[in-house]
Image (cartoon, rainbow, N blue to C red; front, side):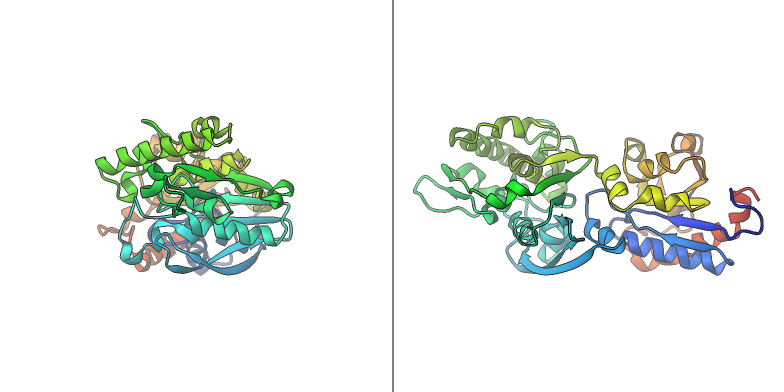
Length: 382
């Protein structure tokens, strides 16, 4: 622990506040508030867990950004980017075919496609990486990765032999498949960094669990579930013997079934939170800091189950850990389950809904940062 004359160092390592601020914006505003309270040194480490924001987090930690244009979830061109450090590439669903890219925010669960993500993977392969990290959160599609696989060279044909576009509506129309050789994948490790454990189909599958948040009605959910089961069956009967086992694997249902396509291509699956903490060198960064600040939009039971702030807390050792969130459903008597010294929430400072208001969120986070800065000497026990 630092002595009274040593500079006090805070590591600010948050996830995004979904709907309002990126992880980088959260870290910047908190740091500005803390610095306004006095001479406190802030180390910033915006984080991601394999969901949206993963490319930005990698770039902040030193990866290079490579821009490209891909078809968005409805086919419209969108500006996307991947991260690459010469060895590892990070490719993200959210900035290629994510919910936030739907025109006018109109949800299209049957028509949205994962093709743009596949084109980003193809672009990453052209850089000859040793590995590609596939960040799957925030997808608009429920196409089982059909669009992604189409971009990578697979062809899916209907009963008349015509090629089908990859989307949820066409899953049930697939009659045969022409496979791609993808020789470049033989020398590239594919890693799905995700903490989703749902299978592709069934009561715990992608359509049933995640379909409604993508706009799927009860009828749409049933159609997508049947379509995905049919899609797997056609792949299996077309000579892809491991299609069924991939569909049943935990995590196949992530990102509307893109997880299935990634597993189908031979990807391994790791904990998203811990993988990104390793990738961004969290352990080294926190070792030189007195206090760790983490957070996300909502701290609740899912957080305790292993989301990013819980992983940060677990790996922070004995140093004080402060959480900042839009809201918290975790009563104070349960803070100890994450070894939290304190939890600050935006909801404690306003009666307004800050979850879709980046200006209000930033204002309140700066105020919280100032309060943390003012109380820092007490928090680190000097």
